[in-house]
Amino acid sequence: MKITTEPHSYVAIDYSLTLDSGEEVDKTEPDKPLSFITGLGQVIPGLEKQLLGLEAGNAKKIIVEAEDAFGPVNQELIQEIPLSNFPDKQKVEPGMSFQAQGPSGPLMLKIQSVNDDTATVNLNHPMAGERLNFDVKVLEVRESTAAELAAANSCGCGPGVECTPHHQSSCGPSSGCGCG
Image (cartoon, rainbow, N blue to C red):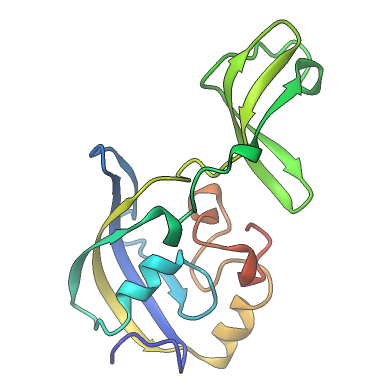
């Protein structure tokens, strides 16, 4: 069976993800593939689009431009925040990352610089503006079941995928998942 969006395919893949610099930023663990259902926004659009038509056993190198991944860097998401907003007695330094609660749920912020009273933070996704290089092997493709579709449209990222920071990037706001 080939990967399609109609009917929705259940897909399991192994992958490694590198940036153009060669830095490996993510990969599946042995015997723990990334599984998702197509057409529900559970993986970045550029990856899903390039997986369409593949079958179990196929391997492919996939390049996803920033626009089809986490988008370009949004300068409006680089902001100054008073140091008083950080945990008491927490030394705040450039390069540190913190999890904060935003209006749509948890978000990561990275400290770019610190002065006497404020910290300049970047609220963009850590891979915003990056071209992503996937090395993918398709392990399983089949038609999704009604139960899998129902689970994927409720909370969580889909069958076999935990809603963790590791998989937040594959769980977009349009998926109905609580971690987008």
